[in-house]
Image (cartoon, rainbow, N blue to C red; front, side, top):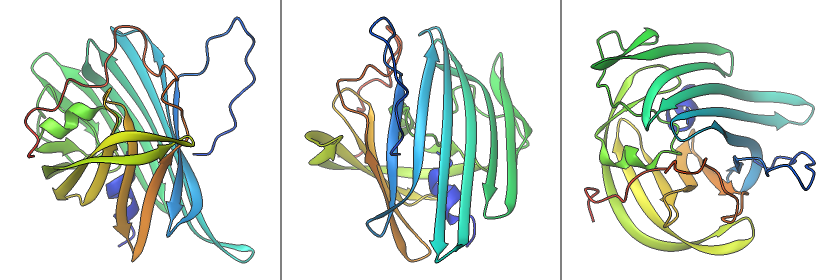
Length: 234
């Protein structure tokens, strides 16, 4: 049961650094992570580089306190490199309440292979990880688990459009249900950006609340989070 959080996450309310008028705002997608309606951590996705050479840095920090004691802690760090829309490198470290995981992998001309992680056979060259910011994953039935390096078989169902709160504003978002090796719901904005996540772990409902406004430019010019989803079940 200890890895339930990692299966869904190894995927906040963050204080934005002060910037001058000459500096571009940070390209950061930030979520507050709630457990049964109460905040218990953060998840951030930072984008840098260009559309042709994109770097993505992901940080997840969760903990559950009981009085002065911390009874659960989860941390995950993930750095992804993308070239022209293809994942070319991934390096992750995870501490799932004392259990340590590490995944390292890179692209080959016709495949993707892990140097560390559970998947030992060559992976498809266009494999996508469970970091969720890349909406094109909804077009695939196999995902790379960024915590364990295991391949996850999934089925996707589009549940329809909903109005959700994003950084204090009401926004339209499409809701998708993921089933199979992972069980969770994902929300995406009309422009393809990730807007929310929900799943159940250890009897608790975990919900992501996006803090980054829709007006913030997340990706470098020319980079897109994904094409329109045409093949997801309606």
